[in-house]
Length: 267
Ligand code: ADP
Ligand code: MG
Image 1: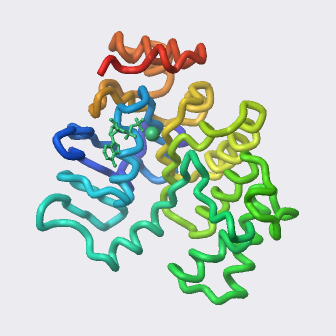
Image 2 (image 1 turned 90 degrees about the vertical axis):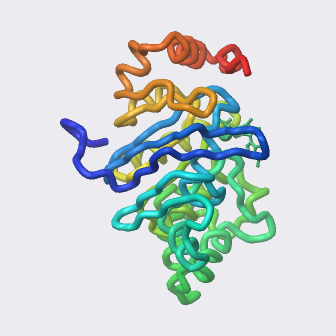
């Protein structure tokens, strides 16, 4: 989190991102800005477009139009625009993504899960990749599980491995898509603890979560997405404590009381 007034220059910004699947328009001009060390959180009902937006941010999905800037690089999206394959590879490495479903390779050990992208994308030597993997496993408290296979770990441990894998790429920004939503309630805490420590070390993060108390604690800014539009945006105290729109108020109230389904949009 940053202290004081909003930091100056956005490091990551997305403007007017639009995306349709067939005739279904999912994003109607969504944007955000994050300065270095800021945590921007997106909340909203299931189906509001949060995952699609994150996937557009790191080009796992191509937006139909809009602009994305990361550091000094700017990409205008749309027909005839967009990064080249080589640029894409580099861009994705600069924005680490953590998924709800961990996405670990089940046939690879914990260490191999982390070293594989280091070897193939960053072209590190086997020894350097292994050393880096062990460093980041230690960072998430899992040094003792280096030789395990994902199936022999709890969900919380698997997600911590996925976080270590993302960190090991030493990205400039972390994108986290509901990292605790697939976990049994008793395992959520260990993942939130790792995320809290990432916040404390000043990581730039874009976070999608239903963990409202956590979001309120760590976020610099919160965006409420509804039907592919940002319906409300502000500091966490405002968005959670005194939202302007009835829709945001009803979502936040329901989410804080663990009744996500009740907050779903009517569409
Ligand atoms: P959220 O993450 O907020 O739950 P999503 O971004 O996953 O929302 O989905 C938004 C809408 O886009 C949903 O209606 C979903 O069905 C649709 N959608 C997402 N991905 C695809 C896809 N690959 N093909 C078709 N529709 C999609
Ligand atoms: Mg989603």
